[in-house]
Image 1 (cartoon, rainbow, N blue to C red):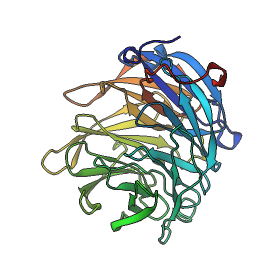
Image 2: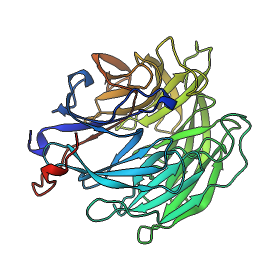
Image 3: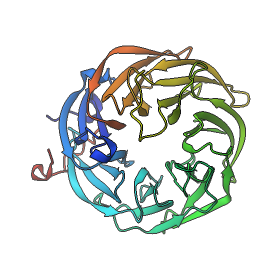
Image 4: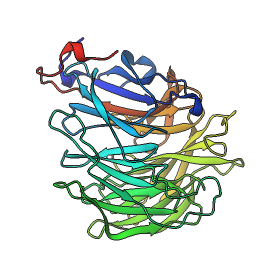
Length: 388
Protein backbone atom coordinates (compact mmCIF):
# COMPACT_ATOMS: atom_id res chain seq x y z
CA UNK A 1 0.00 0.00 0.00
CA UNK A 2 1.62 3.27 -1.14
CA UNK A 3 0.00 6.68 -0.79
CA UNK A 4 1.24 10.26 -1.22
CA UNK A 5 2.81 11.31 2.07
CA UNK A 6 0.49 14.29 2.49
CA UNK A 7 -2.61 12.06 2.66
CA UNK A 8 -1.94 10.02 5.75
CA UNK A 9 -0.06 9.75 9.00
CA UNK A 10 1.67 6.72 10.47
CA UNK A 11 1.87 5.91 14.19
CA UNK A 12 4.83 3.95 15.54
CA UNK A 13 4.10 2.25 18.88
CA UNK A 14 6.90 0.96 21.10
CA UNK A 15 6.26 -1.60 23.83
CA UNK A 16 7.59 -3.66 26.72
CA UNK A 17 8.26 -7.22 25.63
CA UNK A 18 10.32 -8.99 28.32
CA UNK A 19 9.06 -11.07 31.28
CA UNK A 20 11.13 -8.97 33.70
CA UNK A 21 8.81 -6.03 32.92
CA UNK A 22 5.67 -8.16 32.57
CA UNK A 23 5.83 -7.18 28.92
CA UNK A 24 3.16 -8.43 26.57
CA UNK A 25 4.19 -6.40 23.53
CA UNK A 26 5.82 -7.73 20.37
CA UNK A 27 8.12 -4.84 19.48
CA UNK A 28 7.34 -1.84 17.26
CA UNK A 29 3.89 -1.77 15.68
CA UNK A 30 3.33 0.43 12.63
CA UNK A 31 -0.19 1.78 12.09
CA UNK A 32 -1.83 3.76 9.31
CA UNK A 33 -3.99 6.30 11.14
CA UNK A 34 -5.42 8.02 8.06
CA UNK A 35 -6.07 11.75 7.61
CA UNK A 36 -6.48 13.74 10.82
CA UNK A 37 -5.23 10.98 13.20
CA UNK A 38 -8.65 9.59 14.21
CA UNK A 39 -9.24 7.53 17.34
CA UNK A 40 -6.65 4.83 17.99
CA UNK A 41 -9.29 2.10 17.75
CA UNK A 42 -9.62 2.96 14.03
CA UNK A 43 -5.92 2.59 13.23
CA UNK A 44 -4.90 -0.08 10.72
CA UNK A 45 -1.91 -2.28 11.56
CA UNK A 46 0.63 -2.26 8.73
CA UNK A 47 3.62 -4.05 10.25
CA UNK A 48 5.04 -5.57 13.42
CA UNK A 49 8.80 -5.42 13.94
CA UNK A 50 9.66 -8.00 16.60
CA UNK A 51 12.47 -6.94 18.95
CA UNK A 52 13.08 -6.56 22.69
CA UNK A 53 11.77 -3.59 24.65
CA UNK A 54 11.68 -0.75 22.09
CA UNK A 55 10.60 1.58 24.88
CA UNK A 56 11.21 4.98 23.29
CA UNK A 57 11.25 6.03 19.65
CA UNK A 58 12.38 9.06 17.64
CA UNK A 59 12.15 10.04 13.97
CA UNK A 60 14.92 12.13 12.38
CA UNK A 61 14.20 15.58 10.93
CA UNK A 62 14.01 14.31 7.35
CA UNK A 63 11.35 11.75 8.38
CA UNK A 64 13.39 9.06 6.55
CA UNK A 65 14.71 7.19 9.62
CA UNK A 66 13.42 5.95 12.96
CA UNK A 67 15.48 5.10 16.05
CA UNK A 68 14.57 3.00 19.10
CA UNK A 69 16.24 2.52 22.47
CA UNK A 70 15.87 -0.88 24.13
CA UNK A 71 14.93 -0.54 27.80
CA UNK A 72 16.87 -2.69 30.29
CA UNK A 73 19.40 -3.55 27.56
CA UNK A 74 22.29 -1.49 26.17
CA UNK A 75 21.74 -0.62 22.54
CA UNK A 76 19.80 1.56 20.12
CA UNK A 77 18.44 0.43 16.74
CA UNK A 78 18.03 2.27 13.45
CA UNK A 79 15.37 1.77 10.77
CA UNK A 80 14.71 3.14 7.31
CA UNK A 81 11.18 4.47 6.77
CA UNK A 82 9.74 3.31 3.46
CA UNK A 83 8.45 6.23 1.37
CA UNK A 84 4.68 6.27 1.04
CA UNK A 85 3.80 3.46 3.45
CA UNK A 86 5.93 4.20 6.54
CA UNK A 87 6.96 0.57 6.94
CA UNK A 88 10.36 -0.03 8.56
CA UNK A 89 13.55 -1.62 7.19
CA UNK A 90 16.40 -2.70 9.47
CA UNK A 91 19.59 -0.57 9.54
CA UNK A 92 21.36 -2.30 12.42
CA UNK A 93 22.15 -1.15 15.96
CA UNK A 94 24.88 0.30 18.14
CA UNK A 95 25.75 0.04 21.83
CA UNK A 96 24.92 3.13 23.89
CA UNK A 97 27.86 2.92 26.26
CA UNK A 98 25.58 2.24 29.23
CA UNK A 99 22.66 0.26 30.62
CA UNK A 100 18.92 0.67 30.24
CA UNK A 101 18.68 3.49 27.69
CA UNK A 102 15.40 5.25 28.51
CA UNK A 103 15.09 8.14 26.05
CA UNK A 104 16.66 9.50 22.88
CA UNK A 105 16.56 12.68 20.81
CA UNK A 106 17.89 13.74 17.41
CA UNK A 107 19.88 16.98 17.62
CA UNK A 108 18.66 20.00 15.61
CA UNK A 109 21.44 19.60 13.02
CA UNK A 110 20.36 16.00 12.34
CA UNK A 111 23.96 14.85 12.82
CA UNK A 112 23.76 13.13 16.23
CA UNK A 113 21.49 11.04 18.40
CA UNK A 114 21.57 11.70 22.15
CA UNK A 115 20.63 8.89 24.55
CA UNK A 116 19.94 8.81 28.31
CA UNK A 117 21.42 5.67 29.92
CA UNK A 118 19.09 5.45 32.91
CA UNK A 119 20.71 2.67 34.95
CA UNK A 120 24.33 3.72 34.46
CA UNK A 121 23.88 7.48 34.95
CA UNK A 122 25.26 8.72 31.65
CA UNK A 123 24.30 10.59 28.49
CA UNK A 124 25.73 9.39 25.16
CA UNK A 125 25.99 10.89 21.68
CA UNK A 126 26.11 8.75 18.54
CA UNK A 127 26.67 10.01 14.97
CA UNK A 128 23.96 9.64 12.34
CA UNK A 129 25.36 8.45 9.00
CA UNK A 130 24.03 9.76 5.70
CA UNK A 131 22.26 6.44 5.09
CA UNK A 132 20.54 6.62 8.51
CA UNK A 133 22.79 4.09 10.20
CA UNK A 134 24.37 4.82 13.58
CA UNK A 135 28.07 5.14 14.26
CA UNK A 136 29.74 4.09 17.54
CA UNK A 137 29.39 6.32 20.60
CA UNK A 138 31.14 9.65 20.06
CA UNK A 139 31.00 10.91 23.63
CA UNK A 140 29.78 9.64 27.00
CA UNK A 141 29.12 12.07 29.86
CA UNK A 142 28.66 10.83 33.43
CA UNK A 143 26.28 12.86 35.61
CA UNK A 144 27.73 13.82 39.00
CA UNK A 145 26.03 14.32 42.36
CA UNK A 146 24.89 12.74 45.61
CA UNK A 147 21.93 10.33 45.40
CA UNK A 148 18.62 11.40 46.89
CA UNK A 149 17.18 9.82 50.06
CA UNK A 150 14.85 7.22 48.50
CA UNK A 151 16.57 3.94 49.34
CA UNK A 152 15.21 1.95 46.38
CA UNK A 153 14.79 4.53 43.61
CA UNK A 154 17.74 6.87 44.23
CA UNK A 155 20.85 4.70 44.29
CA UNK A 156 22.80 6.91 41.88
CA UNK A 157 22.38 9.03 38.77
CA UNK A 158 19.28 8.03 36.76
CA UNK A 159 18.69 10.30 33.76
CA UNK A 160 15.38 9.59 32.06
CA UNK A 161 14.90 12.30 29.40
CA UNK A 162 17.14 14.27 26.99
CA UNK A 163 14.95 16.77 25.06
CA UNK A 164 16.44 19.81 23.35
CA UNK A 165 15.19 23.29 24.29
CA UNK A 166 13.11 25.04 21.59
CA UNK A 167 16.07 26.97 20.17
CA UNK A 168 18.30 23.88 20.17
CA UNK A 169 21.20 25.43 22.10
CA UNK A 170 20.87 23.22 25.18
CA UNK A 171 19.28 19.96 26.21
CA UNK A 172 17.70 19.36 29.61
CA UNK A 173 18.26 16.11 31.51
CA UNK A 174 16.00 15.37 34.48
CA UNK A 175 17.76 12.95 36.83
CA UNK A 176 15.49 10.94 39.10
CA UNK A 177 18.33 9.57 41.21
CA UNK A 178 20.14 12.83 42.01
CA UNK A 179 17.17 15.23 42.36
CA UNK A 180 18.70 17.44 39.69
CA UNK A 181 17.87 18.74 36.24
CA UNK A 182 21.09 19.03 34.23
CA UNK A 183 21.65 21.42 31.33
CA UNK A 184 23.96 20.11 28.62
CA UNK A 185 25.30 21.38 25.32
CA UNK A 186 26.12 19.29 22.26
CA UNK A 187 28.77 20.36 19.76
CA UNK A 188 27.01 19.66 16.46
CA UNK A 189 30.33 19.24 14.62
CA UNK A 190 32.23 16.95 16.98
CA UNK A 191 29.39 15.36 18.94
CA UNK A 192 31.05 16.26 22.25
CA UNK A 193 28.75 16.75 25.24
CA UNK A 194 29.44 19.34 27.94
CA UNK A 195 27.68 20.97 30.86
CA UNK A 196 26.08 24.36 30.28
CA UNK A 197 27.08 27.60 32.06
CA UNK A 198 24.66 26.59 34.85
CA UNK A 199 25.31 22.82 34.97
CA UNK A 200 22.29 21.80 37.02
CA UNK A 201 19.31 22.91 39.08
CA UNK A 202 18.45 21.14 42.34
CA UNK A 203 14.86 20.00 42.84
CA UNK A 204 12.98 19.36 46.06
CA UNK A 205 14.41 16.45 48.02
CA UNK A 206 13.09 13.10 46.75
CA UNK A 207 11.21 14.76 43.90
CA UNK A 208 12.76 12.40 41.36
CA UNK A 209 12.34 14.55 38.21
CA UNK A 210 11.50 12.27 35.29
CA UNK A 211 10.54 14.25 32.17
CA UNK A 212 10.58 17.93 31.19
CA UNK A 213 8.72 19.96 28.56
CA UNK A 214 9.33 23.50 27.33
CA UNK A 215 6.67 26.09 26.66
CA UNK A 216 6.54 26.72 22.89
CA UNK A 217 6.70 30.53 23.12
CA UNK A 218 7.22 31.64 26.74
CA UNK A 219 10.40 31.26 28.86
CA UNK A 220 9.11 28.42 31.05
CA UNK A 221 9.59 24.69 31.44
CA UNK A 222 7.74 22.02 33.43
CA UNK A 223 8.83 18.73 35.01
CA UNK A 224 6.84 15.71 36.08
CA UNK A 225 8.46 14.57 39.33
CA UNK A 226 8.12 10.81 39.49
CA UNK A 227 8.64 10.06 43.18
CA UNK A 228 6.54 12.85 44.68
CA UNK A 229 3.96 12.94 41.86
CA UNK A 230 4.32 16.68 41.47
CA UNK A 231 4.59 19.15 38.59
CA UNK A 232 7.22 21.88 38.94
CA UNK A 233 7.27 25.12 36.97
CA UNK A 234 10.66 26.63 36.07
CA UNK A 235 11.66 29.93 34.56
CA UNK A 236 13.95 29.14 31.62
CA UNK A 237 16.91 31.36 30.73
CA UNK A 238 17.66 30.29 27.18
CA UNK A 239 20.86 32.34 26.98
CA UNK A 240 22.53 30.77 30.02
CA UNK A 241 20.70 27.47 29.93
CA UNK A 242 19.46 28.03 33.48
CA UNK A 243 16.31 26.84 35.25
CA UNK A 244 14.77 28.62 38.24
CA UNK A 245 11.97 26.90 40.16
CA UNK A 246 8.86 29.04 40.72
CA UNK A 247 6.03 26.63 41.65
CA UNK A 248 5.31 23.01 42.59
CA UNK A 249 1.84 21.44 42.52
CA UNK A 250 0.55 17.88 43.05
CA UNK A 251 0.06 16.06 39.76
CA UNK A 252 -2.56 13.82 41.37
CA UNK A 253 -6.18 14.75 42.21
CA UNK A 254 -6.96 15.90 45.78
CA UNK A 255 -8.79 12.62 46.46
CA UNK A 256 -5.72 10.50 45.68
CA UNK A 257 -4.64 8.78 48.89
CA UNK A 258 -2.51 5.88 47.64
CA UNK A 259 0.96 5.59 46.18
CA UNK A 260 1.57 7.14 42.78
CA UNK A 261 4.38 7.77 40.34
CA UNK A 262 4.46 10.59 37.80
CA UNK A 263 4.77 9.43 34.20
CA UNK A 264 4.67 11.89 31.31
CA UNK A 265 4.26 15.65 30.84
CA UNK A 266 3.47 17.81 27.81
CA UNK A 267 2.45 21.36 26.93
CA UNK A 268 -0.43 21.79 24.50
CA UNK A 269 0.67 23.07 21.07
CA UNK A 270 -0.96 26.46 21.76
CA UNK A 271 0.88 26.75 25.10
CA UNK A 272 -2.28 27.29 27.16
CA UNK A 273 -2.31 24.01 29.09
CA UNK A 274 0.04 21.46 30.67
CA UNK A 275 -0.88 17.76 30.97
CA UNK A 276 0.69 15.24 33.37
CA UNK A 277 0.03 11.51 33.80
CA UNK A 278 -0.19 9.64 37.10
CA UNK A 279 0.54 5.93 37.57
CA UNK A 280 -0.96 4.28 40.65
CA UNK A 281 1.31 2.08 42.75
CA UNK A 282 4.75 2.32 44.32
CA UNK A 283 6.81 1.84 41.18
CA UNK A 284 7.11 -0.55 38.26
CA UNK A 285 7.44 -3.54 40.60
CA UNK A 286 3.83 -3.21 41.74
CA UNK A 287 0.83 -4.24 39.61
CA UNK A 288 -0.96 -0.89 39.64
CA UNK A 289 -4.70 -0.42 39.70
CA UNK A 290 -7.28 -1.70 40.24
CA UNK A 291 -8.76 1.72 39.48
CA UNK A 292 -7.80 3.48 36.22
CA UNK A 293 -5.07 6.10 36.36
CA UNK A 294 -5.36 9.78 35.48
CA UNK A 295 -4.04 12.68 33.46
CA UNK A 296 -4.07 16.05 35.19
CA UNK A 297 -4.88 19.18 33.19
CA UNK A 298 -3.38 22.53 34.26
CA UNK A 299 -3.99 26.00 32.82
CA UNK A 300 -0.87 28.10 32.15
CA UNK A 301 -0.69 31.73 33.27
CA UNK A 302 0.64 33.84 30.41
CA UNK A 303 1.90 36.35 32.99
CA UNK A 304 4.30 34.14 34.96
CA UNK A 305 4.02 30.59 33.61
CA UNK A 306 2.46 29.20 36.79
CA UNK A 307 -0.22 26.53 36.70
CA UNK A 308 -3.81 26.23 37.89
CA UNK A 309 -5.52 22.81 38.11
CA UNK A 310 -8.40 22.36 35.67
CA UNK A 311 -9.36 18.68 36.01
CA UNK A 312 -8.16 15.10 36.28
CA UNK A 313 -9.37 12.71 33.60
CA UNK A 314 -9.26 8.93 33.87
CA UNK A 315 -7.15 7.32 31.15
CA UNK A 316 -9.49 4.33 31.17
CA UNK A 317 -6.51 2.10 31.90
CA UNK A 318 -3.55 1.34 34.16
CA UNK A 319 -0.03 2.80 34.04
CA UNK A 320 -0.12 5.62 31.45
CA UNK A 321 3.67 5.69 31.13
CA UNK A 322 3.31 7.83 28.01
CA UNK A 323 0.87 10.10 26.23
CA UNK A 324 1.13 12.57 23.38
CA UNK A 325 -0.91 14.88 21.17
CA UNK A 326 -1.94 13.87 17.69
CA UNK A 327 -0.54 15.75 14.69
CA UNK A 328 -3.38 18.29 14.67
CA UNK A 329 -3.18 18.95 18.44
CA UNK A 330 -6.90 18.32 18.87
CA UNK A 331 -6.57 14.79 20.28
CA UNK A 332 -4.49 13.21 23.02
CA UNK A 333 -3.43 9.55 22.99
CA UNK A 334 -2.63 7.74 26.26
CA UNK A 335 -0.58 4.51 26.33
CA UNK A 336 -1.79 2.36 29.25
CA UNK A 337 1.13 -0.02 29.77
CA UNK A 338 -0.42 -2.48 32.24
CA UNK A 339 -3.95 -2.64 30.79
CA UNK A 340 -2.61 -2.93 27.22
CA UNK A 341 -4.61 -0.19 25.52
CA UNK A 342 -4.19 3.13 23.78
CA UNK A 343 -7.11 5.46 24.54
CA UNK A 344 -8.04 8.62 22.65
CA UNK A 345 -9.31 11.92 24.04
CA UNK A 346 -10.67 15.02 22.36
CA UNK A 347 -9.06 18.20 23.71
CA UNK A 348 -11.46 21.09 24.41
CA UNK A 349 -9.87 24.12 22.76
CA UNK A 350 -11.28 26.55 25.35
CA UNK A 351 -10.95 24.74 28.68
CA UNK A 352 -8.19 22.24 27.88
CA UNK A 353 -10.38 19.46 29.31
CA UNK A 354 -10.10 15.92 27.96
CA UNK A 355 -13.13 13.98 26.80
CA UNK A 356 -12.95 10.26 25.84
CA UNK A 357 -13.63 9.92 22.14
CA UNK A 358 -14.80 6.31 22.44
CA UNK A 359 -13.04 3.07 21.69
CA UNK A 360 -9.56 1.85 22.61
CA UNK A 361 -6.84 0.09 20.67
CA UNK A 362 -5.80 -3.21 22.24
CA UNK A 363 -2.04 -3.68 22.04
CA UNK A 364 0.49 -5.30 24.36
CA UNK A 365 2.27 -3.08 26.92
CA UNK A 366 2.39 0.18 24.90
CA UNK A 367 4.92 2.70 26.25
CA UNK A 368 5.62 5.15 23.40
CA UNK A 369 3.78 6.61 20.39
CA UNK A 370 5.39 8.64 17.61
CA UNK A 371 3.44 10.14 14.70
CA UNK A 372 5.09 10.86 11.37
CA UNK A 373 4.24 11.35 7.70
CA UNK A 374 6.36 9.05 5.55
CA UNK A 375 8.65 10.74 3.01
CA UNK A 376 7.42 10.86 -0.57
CA UNK A 377 10.81 10.22 -2.23
CA UNK A 378 10.24 6.98 -4.17
CA UNK A 379 13.95 6.08 -4.28
CA UNK A 380 14.16 4.43 -0.91
CA UNK A 381 13.99 0.98 0.57
CA UNK A 382 14.44 -2.21 -1.44
CA UNK A 383 11.39 -4.36 -0.67
CA UNK A 384 13.62 -7.30 0.34
CA UNK A 385 14.97 -5.29 3.27
CA UNK A 386 11.57 -4.64 4.84
CA UNK A 387 10.74 -6.43 8.07
CA UNK A 388 7.49 -7.97 9.25
